[in-house]
Amino acid sequence: DQQVKQNSPSLSVQEGRISILNCDYTNSMFDYFLWYKKYPAEGPTFLISISSIKDKNEDGRFTVFLNKSAKHLSLHIVPSQPGDSAVYFCAASDPGSGTYKYIFGTGTRLKVLA
Amino acid sequence: DAGVIQSPRHEVTEMGQEVTLRCKPISGHDYLFWYRQTMMRGLELLIYFNNNVPIDDSGMPEDRFSAKMPNASFSTLKIQPSEPRDSAVYFCASSRLKTQYFGPGTRLTVL
Image (cartoon, rainbow over all chains, first blue to last red; front, side, top):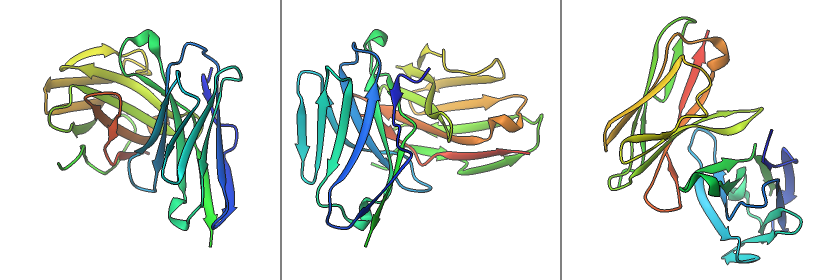
């Protein structure tokens, strides 16, 4: 049973436009969320995170929004650039573990068209 | 820092053979994680260590899988005997705080 879901396996966006990647979770006890970006033949790299006490966190072109009532988070990339083409994973912290154990979604492949 | 180092980068083996994947975490990190990536299930946590001690191995699929961390700078993930369904990319990650840093992964193909 997937506790963290990324229902869109792929997304295509024109360069300069906004990319919106979505993630849903089922466990209301999750208290920390992250987004990772992965290029082919490389490991995932950390992009941005948000604590459950916030509803928005911004870092340059990247903004993560958290809607706790809907158990939904999204990553906005504005403006999108061809170098943003990658697979994006969302992850949630499992508070029951007492440590930094994360549950990852299946990923969304973003393609930014020049 | 060199980042998390994994070896080999690619491994092709035949069913029934033993496979050993290796990981060197970032110096100073006290958590080490082993993940498996598949198309269907994304990134699955297999096992993680804290200060070289295995904390949670509930993600290890079967007894054929085992992991060790003999010291703070080295860990292995062993599959014996390997099966075609073990074919995947295996990642090692380490952390000191909340952010995990991943290695480049080992692509395993079991024929």
